[in-house]
Image (cartoon, rainbow, N blue to C red; front, side, top):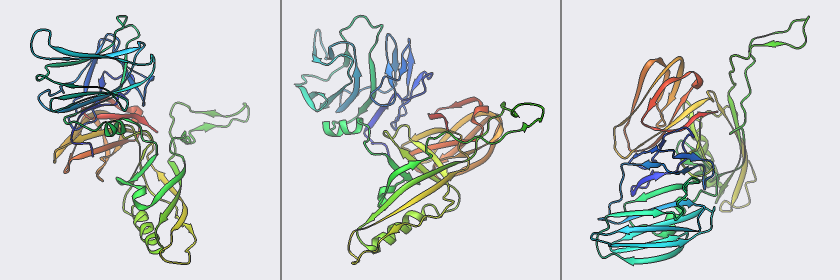
Length: 397
C-alpha cells in the first residue's frame, strides 16, 4: 500500500518515448513533459528525467500553509545547487547554495515542520531556518546558464507531512534484497528465502513453425513471419527456516497452500523497488519436497531446502498499474485486437477472450490499493491502445 502522506511520486522510469512521467502516489497526478524534456538512462535508479530547456508539469502543488517534505536526486555539471524560498513582500526570500560534486548524483531533501525549514544533502543537514511568514514559492536552481547539457532529476517524492530524514532516504533508496511475493504475500512471511532463480528473465524458447525439408536443397525452409513462444518455466531454489519442527510443518503447508488454489497465482519479483516489478501468473506443475533433518528436539532451529518450479502459460504480456485510495474504483482501457487476450486484474479476477475493434474494457476494484494488471497474449498485434493507468511494461516476456 502506498504511503498515505505521499502525494506525488515520480520515479521517472517510464518508456523512453513517453510524454508523461507517471505519478505512483494515490494522487495519480502525472506530469506532462514538454520543451524537449525526456527520459534518460543516466539515472540513480532505472531512468531519470533530463530537463534541458523543457518542463514537467504536474497538477500537484506544494501546500505552503502546512508541513511538507520534498526529496529528489539531482545530477548537474555544476559544482553547486541552489534553492530559493519566496516570501510575501518586496525582496523577501531565503536562499542557499550547496556544494556538490559535478556529474554525481546528490540526494536533497527539504522539510517544512511548522515554521522551521530544514535542508539536507544525503543525511547531513545543510541548514535550518525559521520562516517569518508563509512561503509563496520555492525553486531548486542550477547556476549554469548553458542548459544544453541540462540537469537530471530522479525519484521525486512529495509528502504532505514532515518526515524524518532517515525515513525519507530509506524510501528513496533502492532495496538491497530481491523480494518475492505470491498473491501479495512476501515469501519471507512464510519463512521462505530464495537463494537462486532461473527463468525469470531468460529468452523464451520459440515454437516450431511451419517448415519444409527439401531433399534437393541445403538446410530447411522455415516461415519466420510469425514468431510464437512457448510457456515460461521458472525455478526458484528456496530454503525454509523455522523455530521448531511444528513451526516448520505449519509454515510449509501455509506456503504451498498458496499454489494449491484454483487458477493461476500471482508471482511478483521486486528487484529494485516497487515501481517496475516482474509480474507473472503461474501454476506449480511439479511437486516440491523439502530436504530436511528433523533435529533432536522439537524447539530447535529447523531448515529445509527445496526447488519451486512454476509455469507461466501465457508469458508475453503488457503490465498496467491502477492505484486508488477509494473503494469501488473503476479502471478501463481501450484497444483494437483481433486475437483473443486474457486480462488478469490483480485482485484474483480474470477476463478471457478479450478482442474487438475500439473495445473498452472495464473492471471495478472493491478495495483501495495498488493493482498490477496483466494483459496477456499477442501484445504485438494490439493497436489504438489508450489508458489512464500507469504503463509499467509495454511488453514483458
